[in-house]
Length: 262
Length: 262
Image (cartoon, rainbow over all chains, first blue to last red):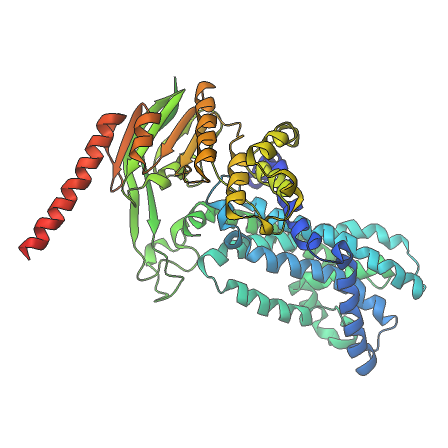
């Protein structure tokens, strides 16, 4: 409940959030020759590399492999980008934090929103691939907002805790990079769970890895592939929600002390 | 009517050790805010930046704060600005309060125009308010056509002028100044002083931290002398400056005597 009142306080700082988002976006894209096109180019390039290595060289067993890959890569890149960039967001903005007051979760939040905008733009990359491979949208697409919400809350929760921890232990950033690499392989992005995980481990895998469920439901919504069973969707939604509120709670509890240590 | 009231204010810092040395916890308080997340580490010490600081301030006029390096002046301003939350006592502020920050949130890759908008938003101005003062800022900073060029192409004087011009338009009731007079050439400094006089005439309250005794004497009616984190003197500026200068001279003398003794 307290988290909700804290969240509503953020409304007062929306001008600031807007400014920070604008600053991030301008720095990230307007300083590059190809500018905003990078939001589309980046996932496509990753897709080409992976679909060549895994799809062609290693002979993937999944049909429509490029589209399959891209539908997992786009949400993954959001998660990866948000968590890894947010981890350094308190340390990286020491200049702001030590000089003006604002609720510091604004920094993590604006980082997540920048990545979310980037994520929405990346969907443009998906359109030509879908047309090329003749994949038709189904009614499943209406599940997309639910998956997005789960993804957003999971990413924000982790980001908040890690941003805070990074103030105390600077190596958090290094660990995060490493753990994210493991998470990439633990999540069905370039493989199908049905092909790689023995059936008796499904329950364990889907319970412990909410990101896997989220990415599978993304793919289901976009390409009409099989959804994980509703039970696991409910579990992951609950886990994502808990991670978010826990992250926010830790962040608020540590904020004042962390500011003094930056 | 007091706009600012400090009662027994104290703030404590813990020396950082980046989580090194030892992971031994103090058993009885495993999880409180100052030993997150693995407990207090060996080699960490608390120290009070200041303690038992009390004074109050009426609306309008200038208050000076002087003291040697490390006497807690800047930290005190940060507590008043809400950046640090006090560990002891409390600090009540009526109205908007903020530190005057030269070049807050400026980024080298962005143009002067972008920086004005972003920096002002971080300082708490709304888009419309910025539109209203934008022309003045450009004029005040004497940048002319360079306003659309990225900051990295500016000379340091240009950046400083833009920074000052942007920050001086704050809509705050209490303005905190921490050594801001060391900017730009002589004529620009004169302009800054005019601006500060304007602010004074507008009936705003200003708190100045400075090492420039002449400035403190001419600008402020009242001055607080801080020494080692406590209030040594609080009263008319002329007396405060005399006392402070005498303290320093005494200390020098004592050092000299000590050296001669050896």
